[in-house]
Length: 227
Image (cartoon, rainbow, N blue to C red; front, top):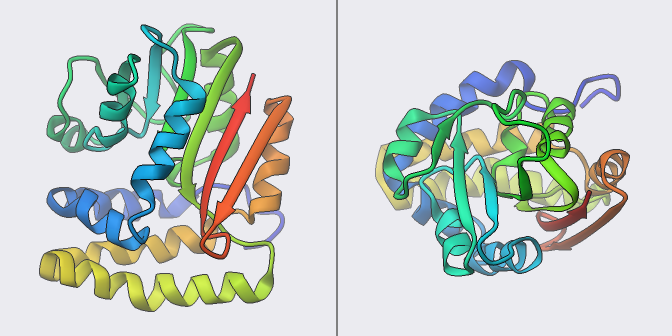
């Protein structure tokens, strides 16, 4: 990705959005297999850091509500936000908002916590998203997310790229047949994903404390930020 390119999916956003909507019935089962079944523990780590009992928690890119269920189980009160109406309809719960990350329809300081499960990577414009996340959080609030990562090591990044390009579509097909090929858009997302070190530096512009933990050759990350 050229250094001058603004981070985020940009003109690939619609393609990825349509691909995600096409795999809603198998979204969670396929995603779990692609993440080598580490996804549940990663969501738990996000919630352990960010969620307080009875606090309103913004679930950014909630999808079918998997992370929101973990938030609720921990005593939080999730507000599910997704650009996809179809995703929101597939989720349980009452507090649902259809909106894009770059224009959050909330007052300043509305939330004590913001969480995201494998969705921040789908920002059309990552810088605008981070500005909106920070604006929507109260002072001292917590932002945590788990997601696809990209190693700072060239060799590891190439290995992960091969996994995304060749293995992920096969896993998708085994999970959902022809419809599962929609997971192939994950490679496009990976290509446009910032390297882990660069992502940490960008987060540091908006949050004074940032911790990034990586596993699976840097391809899986859990990030904790304090506003």
